[in-house]
Length: 93
Image 1 (cartoon, rainbow, N blue to C red):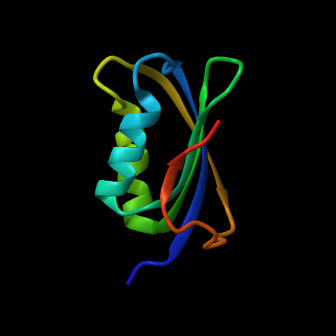
Image 2 (spheres, rainbow, N blue to C red):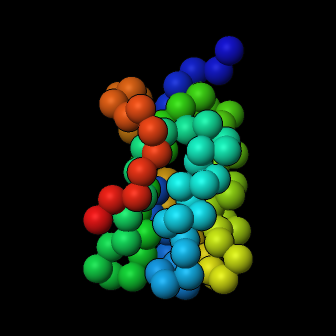
């Protein structure tokens, strides 16, 4: 059994206006992680992923590809202490 982890992520590139948040929510649900995703005023997307370490790694790999119309240039990951505060994965504003 893997340990539970929390990744706070900033995704740069063409990631707004390309359904990135909705596709991230779908991917997180399919992979089985919880947390949230939102657009930031600077044009990046911010997300928090919580769950089993291997599943969080899988969703981080997905972030490099993103939605079909996105073009990701960078995924910055800050590892934080797992909090277990989310029941689902949601799009926030």
